[in-house]
Image 1: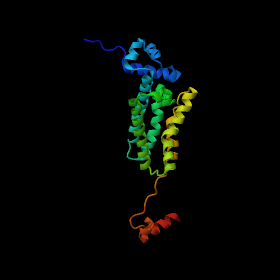
Image 2: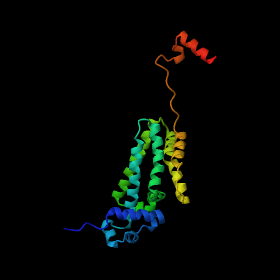
Image 3: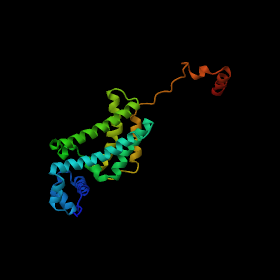
Length: 224
């Protein structure tokens, strides 16, 4: 009976995440990952065809884990405003609980050698990005965001703004403050389209015009 591998793919990618978070993508090499887990270099080459494949996998696993939770939150409420608030808070909370992954995502796919990825890795990245952007677009439609400028506001509110809070603290080497989620939610809410005014009844009249004489006199007395 064959022995199970001592070092699995997840362990190797975990080590690569830590290396990238502390030293940037350049620090993620086959030998560095092997050394980090105490494995022979052959164990890393057994699971990844080369450094480019390793970089692709560590980037994709990190991004896909974030995207999975983020898109789930975008569709978590019937009220799109509540969904928008939850999504903004999720960016902060996920980064707080996954500081190494959040630090890795300060970089871009190009920093992880995307131009040389395999077709399979590139397709995975594109598919994940399309799913996430589609979810943001759908929420924008539900919020009444129409036109290019309105869509830009939604992207700013749901993606760019909460990420800017995370990046500022990570780049300064400081922890996210306890109020970061509240701040992100407040700023996101300020950028959302205003709520539509309630429509008048089918008569097309102001509700006060439909009131009888007694109700109108009562209202006049209240305002007097």
